[in-house]
Length: 156
Image (tube, rainbow, N blue to C red; front, side, top):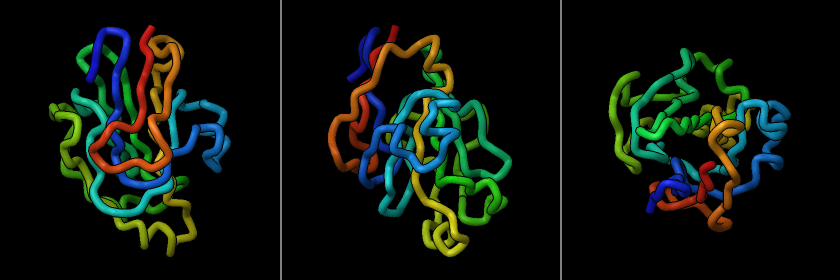
């Protein structure tokens, strides 16, 4: 349920939710990429957390950024320092410019390959433009289920 001052983000993956300050990467935990949350993932597909347009896919395919019609940016980062893996564990099923609905499958990843490479599979969801659009966020529980509400954003 979204309204003018509230947006619900769906969990892009299943797993254990955590505040962003608990993510084991200073870049994210210090909110340098914007406010957000972390998820210790189980496995499986990756879905769009919001309805909107795909505006960025990193070269290594470990990060996809969406933008809602209202201008909110939501980035999904698959694992910590996984850009070093040059896209190997990721299969992205969308392109820049594609319109997606919240809950649409957008990627699949092999968590086992990430762990075998010595990387953390923690998924980080950030709001890159949080300083200008975000008034706060509420994590809706302890465990995330892919495609179900995970975070309530309060919009300025």
